[in-house]
Every structure is written in C-alpha cells, then in structure tokens.
Image (cartoon, rainbow, N blue to C red; front, side):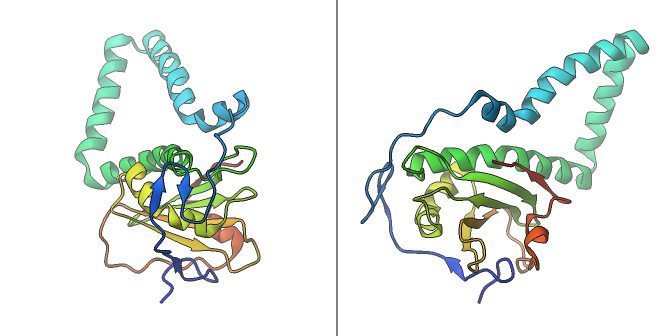
Length: 211
C-alpha cells in the first residue's frame, strides 16, 4: 500500500546494500563531489548566516533602546517561555530540524556517492515539517535515479539520525523529483497524501531550498 505522496509510486526499498563509500553493486564508483559556488554555499547556510549576523545587531539595538540588562532579561524570558511550553518547544525543534536536515541529506549524498558525472549533488528543493519528522523533495542530477537514492537508505538514516527513511519516486511527470520521508517519531497517523505538484512542494509549511 502506498502511504506516500498521492500519485507517486510505491515506496522504493531495493535490497542492494552499500558495499563501500560511493559504490553499490552493479554501479561504478562516482566521481568526487564538485566544489560548490560561493553563492551556493551562502544560500545553503543562509539561516545560520542570518542568525550570526542578526544576533549582534539585535543585541546592539536592544542595548541602545532599553538597556543591556533589560534586553538580556527579555531574551532570557522569551527562550524560557518557549522551552517551558510543550507546543512551542515542539514547534521550535521541528523548525530546527527543517534547517538541519537539508545539510544532513547533502552529507549522506556525498557519503553514498550520489553525484552526477560532473560531481553535482542532488538538490534539496523543499523540506516540510510533518508529524513523523520531515518530508524532503530532491531533484536528482543526470546519472542519479530514485533507485540510487533508495539503495542508500541506510546511509540517509545514519546521517539524519532518523528512525527510518522512506523514499518515493515520481509517477513519471517529474522523474527527477524524489520524495524522502525522514521519520523521527513514531506516529499512528498514515502519511498524509499530497494531491498536486505545487501542493507537494508545500511552501506554506516547508522551507524552499532551491537549487
């Protein structure tokens, strides 16, 4: 039974084990990962860069507006409030995982040798918050298929610190798009179906990553 996104094929679970770094049975060793452009690096780390740049500016503004002690007290109270209220705490961790998971996905792709012949990694398109963890949409470059991604399932589980990873291929309209479900929590809810392509990307509840 297909519990993944609607109009996507059954979950891919090929029994091919990982033989060595970057090599699977019947598949040649991939080339090394190409060095990303500076703009690509900045885009991938934009949230962390915004935090590192915004935190000092926020502190400087609070010191000049209300004083350093008052500003520190406000920030401490806000963080304590989020930490003590369970729904807010769960929301904060869910948002944090949507930032961390794309990095871990790219690490897993590099470890498993899921790169094109020119060294390009699969692009993380969108990371969506779900009750079980995250749903990630990947755009596979030339030479990388949904079967290759599914064959590296154990690598993704280890890199993402996940209980399970489920991989779904497209129904054929967009064969390069792969849906990956990173399961972190046990939930009795079935995987929600996502009807249309743009709804699959779920920009309203996820983080658009781009290429």
